[in-house]
Amino acid sequence: MIESSNDLLNIILAVAVVWITVFVCWTLYYVIRTIHDLRSITKNMSHTSTLFIEFLDELKDKLVIAATSSQVISKATTELVDHVADALGKKKKATKKPRAKKPKIHS
Image (cartoon, rainbow, N blue to C red; front, side, top):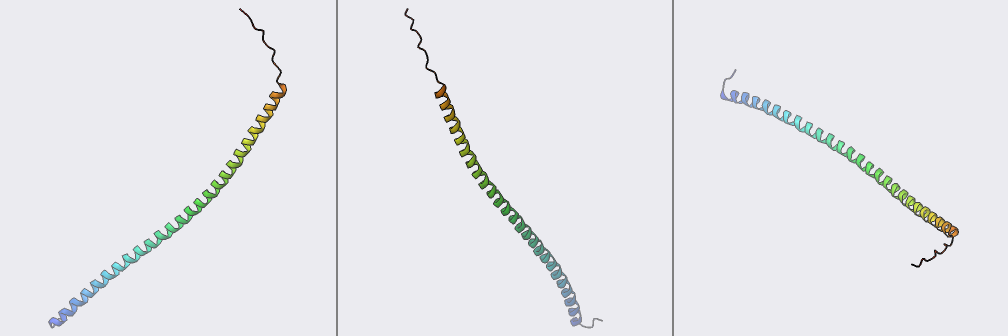
């Protein structure tokens, strides 16, 4: 089978090529898995960031509505207090009776 050193060299080269092929395939498998995992991570991050942006937009809209509502409520409360104060002021003026003077006591 092995007649010369050339045959031995060819066998060793064949074994080396097989091992290099196995190593390259193994390395490619892990590189491909890593790229797949990175793709999944970026896809999840993209989805999460989209949800977060939508949440912030919704929160902004609700805060704008709340601010507008609080302005309206504040203005209505101010007007109500002014109206009640005016009504009470007029009532006190209408029902106010002149006081009788107290006699001075001389000691």
